[in-house]
Length: 237
Image 1: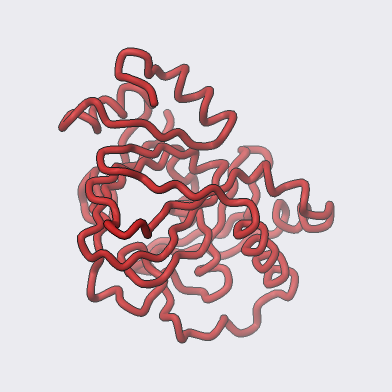
Image 2: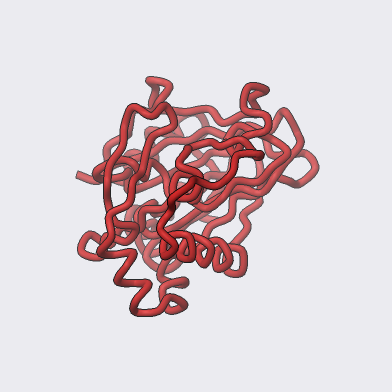
């Protein structure tokens, strides 16, 4: 772990370029968000709750759904806010209270580590074929390729692409009329993610920064209702 004195913008960018993510202890206390803003040299994003900081806690209303606030089930691979014309560059998670029984690991994988497993035909499909992406409330959407090769952005949501819903119920069947190539591609993404992902068990007051342009992430299941994280996101100028 890096101290506040040695942690710099250059350190962050080097780790993100190499691994796609960076985990460190929060040595800034309540000023953690302001310090992240300085180090990322990026603009904070107002989130769906109307605030810069979005709390992630177990929510009874999300039970039985594939949702960030639903305990008892894992999430499926995705990138954050795939429905935006340009998604946020950095996704940051601050762990306030980890699962006391060790669940709820954040899992992620760098797209570059998966790319060689896709055929040239599959690579062309994900780069050339626009797909429909939507927000949780359905008010925002876009058509964009899964892999924006020119912008070096991977855009993915297994839930939206396969179920046509941001947080589907566990009993929801896959969407009808899906392109067979898209179904096969999503199945391959899921299998590769399971085989290649890195599990990160964040401790209290640890912070994870990931490059949302290059990494897919998810979460393992947990049962502790007191597990609590905070999410912030940043756009680059």
